[in-house]
Length: 244
Image (cartoon, rainbow, N blue to C red; front, side, top):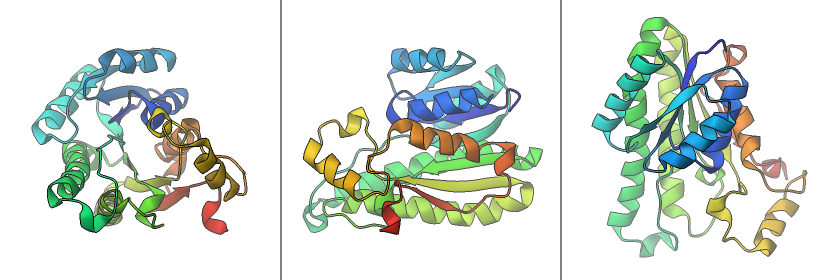
């Protein structure tokens, strides 16, 4: 992508780190955002080729995100692609047992982080008549699983906002898409029993669970010139589980 700048929130580990690597491989200069793990983020960027920078900010804080984007643009150039990947923790267990404070923290955190990002980058993209926005959602926004009510609610809201934003930003040449991974083998899922992972793998035609690069490659493609005719889409990344 001839050095176009891509910004990835939550880019220091797991899926975010894989997205950073894939974007760098595709020719982007990558701005890696993280909340506090600067050392790990710098390691990811170095492994990806080192072209870009690391920027600390709470993705849920509009003022911090606005300042971060201005700093990225001053250092690297205008943001051409923005990836919402910042992780917002959520409570597990039956939905009716969760206190509203915990559920609303996930809802407001997820949507606040997405809103802060697009509010900061969209004006420039629209003015330049080119841009890419990709949001990392979850297959759980469409396929119910017990205990994930707060997560599913927040990701469903994210999906809906992206559909509307795709229509609003499309006339200016900005595409907006959602990727929805199923289970991905990361440090965040390391606690999951091997039997559970094996069962989920058995439900996919490919007979495995995803690795972070399976998501990173798709996100990077959606940020390229070649993906310019794809917008407003929800892409399930579940190894074909939704076909069976």
